[in-house]
Image (cartoon, rainbow, N blue to C red; front, top):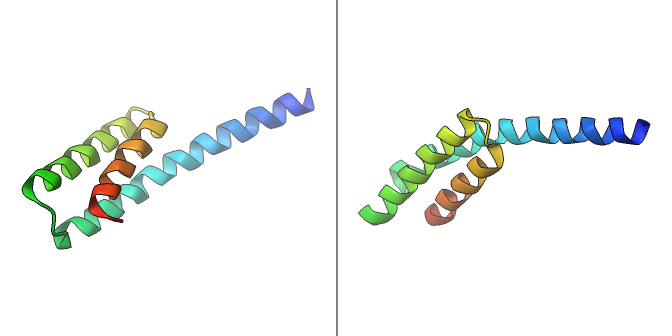
Amino acid sequence: MKKTFLASCLFVISGVAMAHGCPGEMKKIDAAMPTSKLSAQDASKVKDLRAKGEVQHNAGQHTESMQSLGEAKKILGI
């Protein structure tokens, strides 16, 4: 019983930690965009992925949000 409770607590805590990671990733993208030297196509894709990540974060889909934001950061080179 104790192990199940502990596992449940760790699962919840990891979800909360991921939830707080999304806004930080969005801030990194926002900070890098003004000085980036991306093509118009890449800049548009980064903006779309960043917006998608925010929508996913607000919907509680933090794993998906982190994936979208990670793709945007990869394109930005950060």
